[in-house]
Image (cartoon, rainbow, N blue to C red):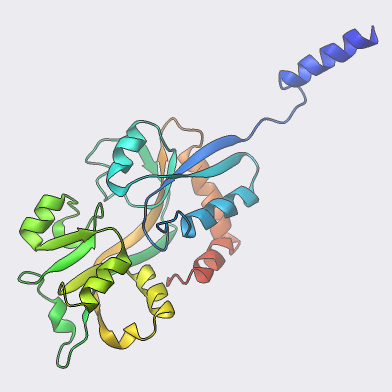
Length: 252
């Protein structure tokens, strides 16, 4: 009889009568976008994933590497559920994909950099036509109306596309292009690691675009946008996110 009663108890536990529900896995997509996602997959997105996993137990956030230009197809195929440091302006609405966005939780922007030369000042950045540019394949630029098409960028803006901000800056320093467009957050960390570059580079006061970073959430996925929004809001309010940005060298 005892064995029978114990069997009923275990069945009840299995049906959820007294057990703890398993945590939902949330796949976080990320493409190279330093300092948010470095080429090796490390970076601020991974730090944010670790922070979220420590802050709650209902969800387990895991990182899924994707390519910048492939992220739309990967989302449509359900390959990831969430993407941090995204913007609705980056073709998501045009592609009609089933996504929602959290509130803004971090701001930043993109600046132009050129070689510092005698007599060259901020007026150098006023006109882009007639100059050669370099940027990142799959990125969206304000001066090009956020159209990431490589053919149009090359044809209309004389823009080369490479795989990293470091390559972009190297091309500027080598005189292979006139200017690069880089994220301000990457530039501050780069100049911190390479202080001699401060004298070699002229940085624009003009921003190509202002980042209003949000988290993208796939509709029908394991976590609702309102839930993630609340998690991020709580971490911002208690000082966890500001401390994370500060450790990463992000200028807010």
